[in-house]
Image (cartoon, rainbow, N blue to C red; front, side, top):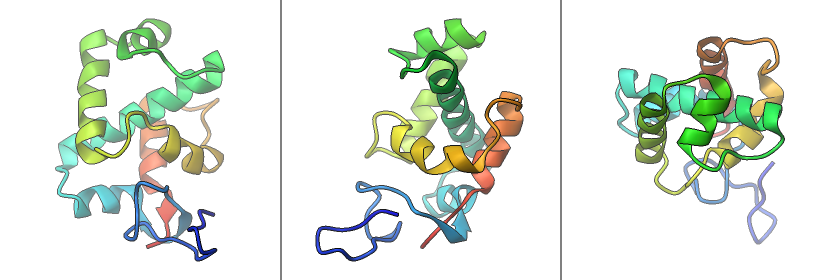
Length: 129
């Protein structure tokens, strides 16, 4: 749960800079649609979050670059950069998916999921609005 400076619970619409809240009103997919991200681009955003989370889980650290992630997870570097670009378009307030991943990692099965399946799981996590 993210709290504001006055102890008030902050919602996703009040501030994305502070963080996301797992809740029950809208999914990450719905949030991306609300932000004007096309369905095709949403897939790239969610795959970047999923791959980033897989890397952090396996390596125990954040990737240094999309190249670092690509080499470790067997993804083409060009694809990793495309996914990162899509993420930054959707969430310009974040350099990395760390904040988003911190909110969804407990809700998904990162150890047993293929990246595409994990991306679908990430997209279906509900956030408070």
